[in-house]
Length: 131
Length: 111
Image (tube, rainbow over all chains, first blue to last red; front, side, top):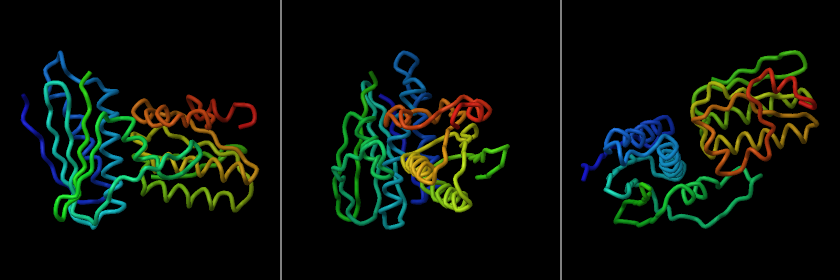
């Protein structure tokens, strides 16, 4: 299948558009028959943005690395940072809450979500089916 | 990036670019400042906002609550297709009055 994409950004909000751009670039990677539509790309980009924004808010200031692996039937995303341990909370906010929606959104937009602490790194694995 | 323009009895807040954790802070401060002068009929023009994340949506919800609490109103106008997703996922469109344009928001009864 297609080769993986890997990029690294400083852990700052103004760089998160670069990550979203990389997600949107998946449209160029797949052959026409499998190509994800705009709506799906926006959904994945929002999920990756929310996960990365959470790293910016809680991280140690080091870089954020995103690896995207376009597989035949799904896309796998890895987000890695060097901040303190940052496991996923289980909060579910209601419609009028002002905070805590990010994780809820990620869970809605992705089919899989796993957090692991690998040595001094946080690694978040997200995966979405193509159809 | 953020600008307030008085138009008749309304205060139009024009946002531009991304509504994220950073611009959310600016928006909250702006609303605070605006409401210190008294109740206001606010229209937030989202026509030049290309992306809204959960912090940005949180700031809009906060602005709505504060404006209503102060006895005013807040409507959203000209939400773009690219930024619509988060409103649908969170069902936030149910709590906001949303209009296609600033003019439509200003003309709405009670706005």
